Length: 395
Image 1 (cartoon, helix red, strand yellow):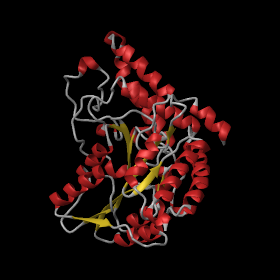
Image 2 (cartoon, one colour):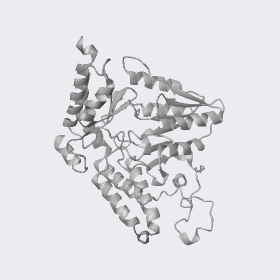
Image 3 (cartoon, rainbow, N blue to C red):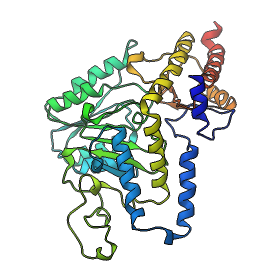
Image 4 (cartoon, one colour):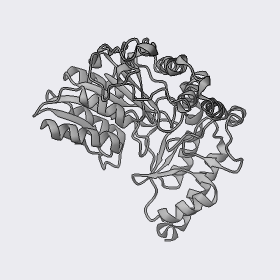
């Protein structure tokens, strides 16, 4: 795996001394993505260089690329969004929700998702059912997945979950949850931000009603631009805003004042206003091209090999890590032994230039193709020092 990691690292501009294990926070811009951004800035310095096609073709290519990555046959079902919260607001606006019905989420879900459905339920008189994380010392993930399935019943209108919990990478069984939601007549929505791009995902297998992804993490694109796939449940819905560019015939600029009520096909009606962002969209296009070329399965295999070796060593130090079945290679949650000074650990990690995140009481470790075994060694060394310094280790 080492030569491969070296070749992929050369595609990025990460400092040689940096151990960047934080792609779940933000992906580093690859040289390819950064170059696309620089070219885009040069173009907008002289707007006469921009033509009608620049409003449409990059967006169409982003749709095609994302559809290919998630195995979707129809790119027109992909909308360009500024954030997952925007996609969730669109889903909420177009999901029938009545008093007495239930929306199911999991505990400590990403705030933008939770806030959307808290408001939607409050306005409709529905109930937001939050499935708590078990405190079981055994398989926390297995128990949590079982509780999630039990929470879905005939009152459920919608289930919205991630594939991997953003705080520690704990995995939810999308196939089982989706099947239970469909059996209950509920819609099934997936937040793919922490998984799509780093794990294979196929909408034909998972069968969500909608899938939303931020672009700046595992899709390795820029901040403030993402993508969402909407299934047939959202055909003919009402967008959050009425954009000129989402209307049929909008490529005929001289006819824009001839207002039209019909939208372009599929989910294009749900695009954010000014979706043709002449700097960010070319960067996202370049990012999706490279994700397609190196393939999410490659990311999954490389990171699993790295984190499996590190996980064994961290367990020997007394850290708690979920069983391999219930986690992915690219997002590893490490729960520390009692007594470890987390603030001091953070300082020690920074001094060693090991970049990770502290989320929900766990160290969140998020490697990518540019990561090698030396990066994980640095992390384990710092954690070992923190464990040795803990009061419990001195008795």
